[in-house]
Image (cartoon, rainbow, N blue to C red; front, side, top):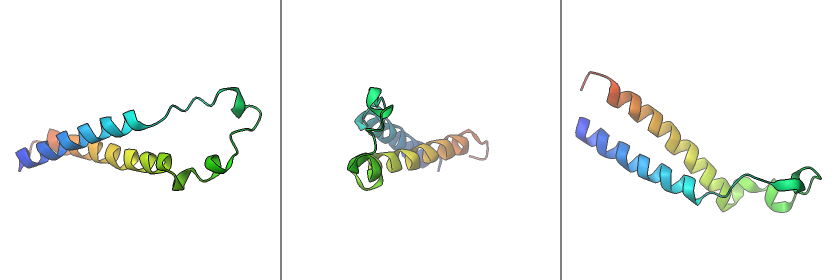
Length: 76
């Protein structure tokens, strides 16, 4: 059982690293001060590729946390 959870944990680690590296930076520059960030893509970010990457990152981060706690328990 511990080996199976460890393999899943390693896959989550690799996936989380890859997804984070695929995301764009959040530096909006001076355009955010003037309100230029309120464009079509800025308002509909949840339906874009960037929005999907953010959702996947959240799921993998929660899995990473849960699996790391499970692996550090002494019931295995």
